[in-house]
Amino acid sequence: MSQLLITGGAGFIGSHTCVILLDAGHDLIVLDDFSNSSAEALVRVAELAGVELGSKRLSLQRADIRQTSALEQLFAAAQSRGCPIEAVVHFAGLKAVGESVQNPLHYWDVNVGGTVSLVKAMQEFGCRTLVFSSSATLYGYPDEVPIKEGAPIQPINPYGHTKAAVERLLNDLAASAPEQWRIACLRYFNPVGAHPSGRIGEDPLGRPNNLFPFVSQVAVGRRPEIEVFGGDWPTADGTCIRDYIHVMDLAEGHRAALSTLLQEPPQVLTLNLGSGHGASVLDVIQAFETACGRPIPHSIQQRRPGDAAITVADPAAAKERLGWSTRRNLHDICRDGWAWQSANPSGYGPGPASA
Ligand SMILES: NC(=O)c1ccc[n+]([C@@H]2O[C@H](COP(=O)([O-])OP(=O)(O)OC[C@H]3O[C@@H](n4cnc5c(N)ncnc54)[C@H](O)[C@@H]3O)[C@@H](O)[C@H]2O)c1
Image (cartoon, rainbow, N blue to C red):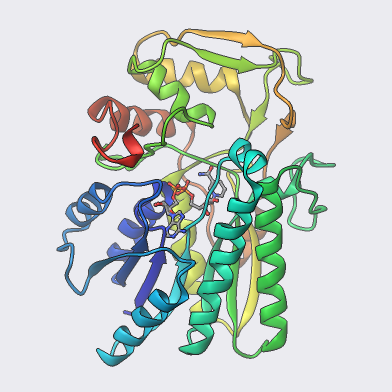
């Protein structure tokens, strides 16, 4: 099996994907600056996969993706050891919509500048297989639901603009050498849940931006109640509907994308990764109450600017191209999310991600 570079591999989605890729037999080099994660996540990834952290199976490089020289050194070192990096799975980036509105320059710098830095190093060392974490955010307010990949790209915040810009960049790059680049832009819907062991999960820095970690932090007593933004949306119960995807399904989607890229001729694959099922905010709260066996206090507030009523993926293309579809439902998501949150009420503990 091949050697892979996983940028942002200590983060929420990266850590779960590392477990799946290690199980598939790949050797991994994780590069992370730990700006939104803890090294403890990788200790637990190693434990779950039955490998040693720091060994050939799973090694760690603390660096910022914007430092092209650090990336070049890493590619050069792998080459000189006789096991060049065959492909990159690129999770490293910033993802908080509100923060991107406050500080767009930082988002463009890390998300777009960081990707430019990465692909420069890849190009220099002849590594031309890349799986990129894109986002359903780039559809903005969708014209039609379920959303197909051909839907208009119309981001409504700087975070979404950076994801659209990176997709553009990767398409331009592939068009310059179509016989060389193998690229997957995976547009995630709403990744949630945790590894079923409860050993790894989502550990957001400070106040969570998304519903699911908020619900689980209220359930565990870290926060008093959830504010539900809008009870008057045009949906059955008046709350927003999203497509929640179990992070283990998402991780398996990365394994499938990587193997399709490595087996097929060079191409750019642009695919939605979602379940195709919508759940309202109240559905999620209710399912989580069932999973944790306690009530979750919540109150309906005014709508929040920038939210769309319903976003649900059409996942048919991923099924057709990758032979992949989700296997876990909202019940599994809440059970596994609660296993993580209840065993780790303060996340990974001391460190930047436990504030
Ligand atoms: N979680 C979601 O809801 C969601 C949805 C769609 C897309 N995405 C994208 O998926 C990717 C992973 O998301 P996640 O939820 O795992 O986030 P995360 O914050 O948990 O993981 C990102 C990782 O990247 C690292 N990182 C950030 N900037 C870096 C830099 N300059 N150099 C090196 N490492 C850096 C962080 O320390 C962290 O470990 C991101 O690109 C995100 O935009 C996430």
